[in-house]
Image (cartoon, rainbow, N blue to C red):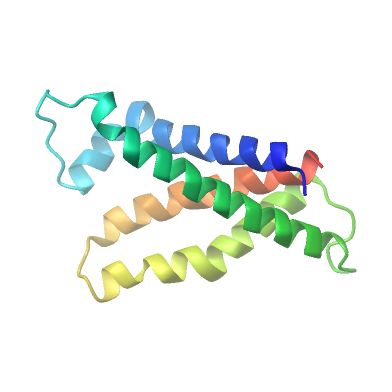
Length: 137
């Protein structure tokens, strides 16, 4: 496995998460999550959360790289291309991330719309990581 590709894929997911929850759709996310900015938010207050977020992204990219490695030897997948990497990422999202995160809606009564927002963000993230890991061996 290419450790640099894993770190870059994790960074790409981190940046996408920032864009998704900030400049692109931040107002929608705040509405769905019932977040009201106070004006006192500081980037330095989020450092610990950001580090943990990146660590989790590295773990996810590492597992995705392992799945890509296994899938590459499968006669069903064959040689890896960017779109096959995206498919592997989407399949892992469909099989693991979407079902496990849906527990928050089913049992914890969290908002379905917020879950859907986060699910789409994570689907894009796993797809992009799959692409990076497939093309950067």
